[in-house]
Amino acid sequence: MVLERIDTDPALSAPFEWRGFANPRTRRHRWEQDNYLGPTDSLLAVALADDTFIGFVTWRSSWAFGPSGSVDIGILLLPDHRGQGHGTTAHRLLVDYLFATTTIHRIQATTEVDNDAEQRALERAGFTPEGILRGGSFVRGQWRDYAIYGRLRTDQHPNP
Image (tube, rainbow, N blue to C red; front, side, top):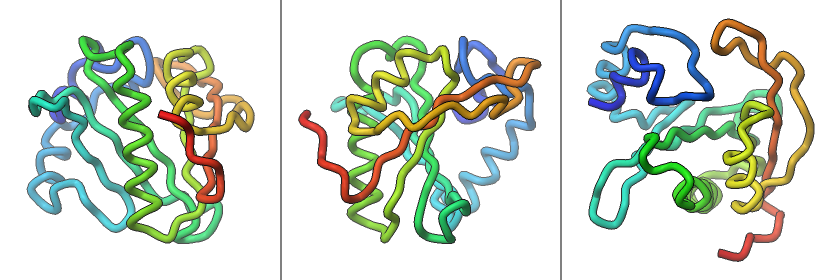
């Protein structure tokens, strides 16, 4: 199962976001518990029209703006499916889903400052660059700077 590989295979997320080895059974347990659709964090598969699994998107509550005002999103596409526009499409679909099914007002995403492809995907999906979080996360053995992007419910919907 790909979810288990996230915690055991650094190549799955290379060259970004590898946070180290973790217990892969934790993800299996979560899947069995609530199919990764929880009250504070969730995960959906990203698939092609022929149902080929190519990655997943996640979201979790961001308490910085109140209990229901904001969520942080993330994405992981399998290496063979990157650079083909799937990230932009997945971000757009996730944003549309979250704004249609929740009362949240703000969706935010962070990415390592040198992840140019993810930054382009976020901007094409209607996100606005908002700044740099210096030393925002400990990844691959060092503190890394992150770019933060935001999208508000009131922002204009991007052209497809």
